[in-house]
Picture 1 (cartoon, rainbow, N blue to C red):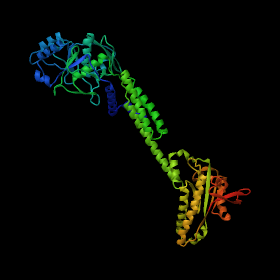
Picture 2 (spheres, rainbow, N blue to C red):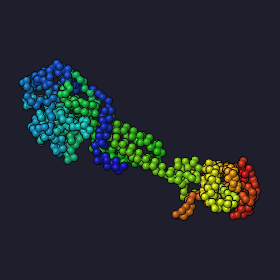
Picture 3 (cartoon, helix red, strand yellow):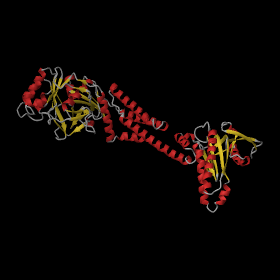
Length: 588
């Protein structure tokens, strides 16, 4: 999260580009409307085929201005430069037409010249404006006769962003010690207010606003630029009662400028600027936008970090999507309702990265935990129970807890004669005992039992030791015992064919409350059970030889599975006063 904030403040070009692209989406989401104030006159290939090659003689431009004015144009704005005298001698006539038709001309601030004498323009400044304005070493104005006759002149410079698109235009530019207005701003001054000057306010932090007397203050960024409202379209033919912006659209004459709405010609861009200023619809990116966006990153990051740790990993992407959708919707509402440009792309990306990272870390952690659980329990717990513990590790309280458990002790009978016979071949003995224990263990695990430990030829197991509560653990233990007796019978058939004596088994089963958990020293411990009922199960296993039954079952267990148990007798066991009732599995 801190990294996201640092990157946002640093604002490298990929982040800046992402933000600008998102602001493009906002600015183009506004419904398009056609201007009722401005129309265009495009000097295209068809016009050149009629009027001749460009540049036209200025007598011809004078005729064009008069024709447009006579057709109802309020004023004519040329997005064309006239820095040199007309080779056809038409400057005087063109200047004369400007006395009849309100005409505005264009100039350009440039690095290709060091000329600083432009035209007289009054700019009243308050605060540090001059040092913060975009600066050029020179300016290329029109020839003096045209400059003096024009109703106004403005620069047509554009300021591309880091990705090459033009979204903001400067209201004023600095050349030497002079400030010059943009063309769109000067048309507003000349037609809407008639005042000969501007007002500009700034501070050490940058330019703050520009004002045309009689109009509302125009807020700018620190460089004196305003965001253009690109939702306005213009009639492509001159319309009576409108200001006509004239520009050359014939191929190869005027450069196309990339904008959020595509490539536009300079006169189209200046028309958009004028309409934006006239209507007061310039999008605004307040000084507090960065602070708000960083606060959103911090807030949403904290929310996503919490969700990543508490929601299922499958729900985290959905949560991130919803948070991103709300963030985008909020910024869209702020723009459409108040014209405020707030970036939702970088906060949403930061949240997505943070959520993805948190989810990935959690998945890795959970995967490692599952591996740990498999390593701890996989060899002596049923796969079903292992899966249960993997899905819900909280069920594994290894610190110790009291649970109702069914305990089994199973011991191989007649193992001593077999071990004596194979005392010279211990590997064969181990092989045989492992074969038998594998068969017995399989019966335990297939019936959801947990193998506590192996003690030589004895197996200790339990049911309901781990995981969710098993309501029929007594019956599962009895079914496992029945299967173990059958497995031993099959094993005896195998070893008799190999020339070894038959083996038998004694199984003691009991149910009761036990302490289950890690037991041992700090250096070495096992997951096991402890309690009086565990001892009773062990005593029942020993008593099987005396009673003559392979399986002896405690009363607590038998009462839960009377359909498969039968009463045997009352017997005495070590550690118990008096006689206890014991049962067995029918047929065992």
